[in-house]
Amino acid sequence: MKYFFVALFILPFVFASCNSNAQAGVDTKVVNVSAKQAKALVDKGVAQVVDVRTPGEFAQGHIKGAINVNFNSPNFEQELSKLDKNKEYLVHCRSGHRSGNALRTFKKLGFKHIDHMNHGIIDWNNAGYPLTR
Image 1 (cartoon, rainbow, N blue to C red):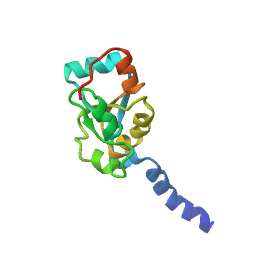
Image 2 (image 1 turned 180 degrees about the vertical axis):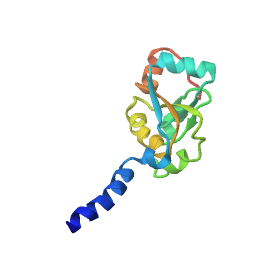
Image 3 (image 1 turned 120 degrees about the vertical axis):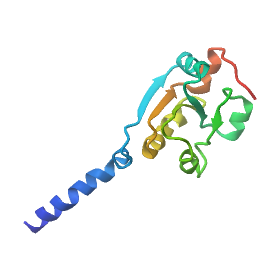
């Protein structure tokens, strides 16, 4: 019986700690977009582009106006936390893998709206869209 009351007391804290968005009080809206949809967002100025590739990859060519926040950096979460969580962001990497993994951090930090370019800069290049250096 004693363990029952202990479990009743502890259980709400366990469930609350499992959902970092619940702690932040924010449900992050994530929209997966194609390169064509991403280009429309960029052209309209709707979303700030966040390129999570390495600085070397970024220097080889990136979407005009993009900011580089290296997913592989030990300071990735700290750098992301400096961004305005109320803005809309278009996030991508080379193929979509790193940026897909980065979505967890965006959610954890309480960002409100993230557009994720599914197949990254590869898809952007294949569509023939411009990059800047």
